[in-house]
Each structure stands twice: as structure tokens, then as C-alpha cells.
Length: 261
Image 1 (cartoon, rainbow, N blue to C red):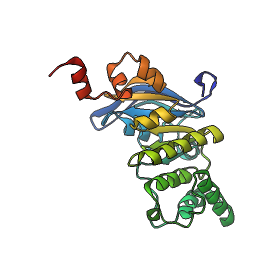
Image 2: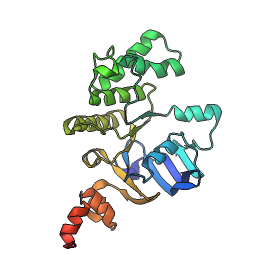
Image 3: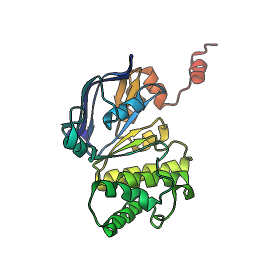
Image 4: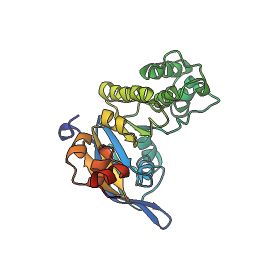
């Protein structure tokens, strides 16, 4: 994916956000381009989750704009805001599937809420979405009957129910073994390439970042510490913390390298 020839689909400009007297994000600006896999990185408390909540409209910023396909979700209200929300789907770290509903019922729920499609059409869409994520034949299973990786795939299928242009994924590889995580990475890349879906992924899993990310931003103390392609940041960043992150250098490694007791 070449950002120089791609169209911006998300533009964050001058975003400042916080809770009460605490400022979590300060003057954040970046662009996500159509069809790319864009990762938001950072340590605990860096503002990753807050950034995602702002982008999907769950929280209101103190200042700034968030343009989704050219429309400001911060300022939009009523039907206009709902139309913007329809442009993206969201999955959460736990998957957040409804445990008492089958996978097919989980996927058809947003169709029931936002469309007037007949039941057979909704069932067909659910089957198609499950096939896209490699879960054909599992429509009648409950989430508890699936592995963690399968639940993550099912959550992606539900997020795609209304054919969004953007998918936000919160820690998709959390709790998964390396093989299952690699399979999920392959699915993300396939959906981005074959369906043109733009992904915004909040994660700290370095193998996944290196496997899927076209570009990243790294948050630190409420600001963007670095942004660019993972390989570029790993090799050429002028920020030691950024280089250490991508090269998996721990504090113990630093002490051994410097000889400091």
C-alpha cells in the first residue's frame, strides 16, 4: 500500500482528550489511508485505548477533529452521525460476542437492527461472513463452543455484517498462541488486500505489528513519539525508546550493553 497514491479515509487533527482533570492525549494528528493496515502502539497508560474510543465516537474530545471519509464524527449529530458510524465495524479484546446467541444470530443482530432485509437474506449474509473468516459450518455454534482464535474470527465476521469500509480491532491477538495469532494476521491481510478494508489495530504484539502493519503511530505520554513503517522505525528512528521497542530490547539488555550495575 503506497500512501502517496492512496486516499485519506481517517484524518485526526489536533485531538486533545482526557477524563476529568487528566489530559490523556494532547494535540494528536495523523492520517490513515484507504486500504492500509494501521496500528496504534504504546505502553500501558500511553493512551491507545483512549485514542480508539475517540475514533469510534464513544468519547468526545476536548479539542480537535476526527474525519471519517471526510466527515467529522466529533461535530456530527443525529442521522449524519449514524451514517458515519455505519462506515466502520469494531471488535474488542474479548470478542464481545453474545454468549447466549449462536454465531449466526450474533452476525444477523446488526442486520436486524439497521436493515429491513428478509430473514433468508440475513442468514445468507451471515453464512458469507463466516466463510470469509474461515468459519463455514459454525453458524449454529455458541461462542463457548469455540476456541479463543475462532471467537476472534467470529467477532470480525460480525463487525463486517453491514459491509463497513473500516474495521477497528482492539488487541486482536491478545491471549492467542503464536500459531493462532499468525493465522489471524493472515486473515487481516487477506481482507485488506482482497476486500479493500482499512484496518485500525490497537496492539502491542510485536510479531503481529511486523506482519501486518503498513504504518504505525507510537503513543508515549499522550503524544505521538513516532510514526512510519515498522521496519523504518526499527532501523532508523532517532528515538532510543522506539528502537528498543521494535528490537525488543529490555531494561536488563540495556544494562548488559552499557555495563551499568
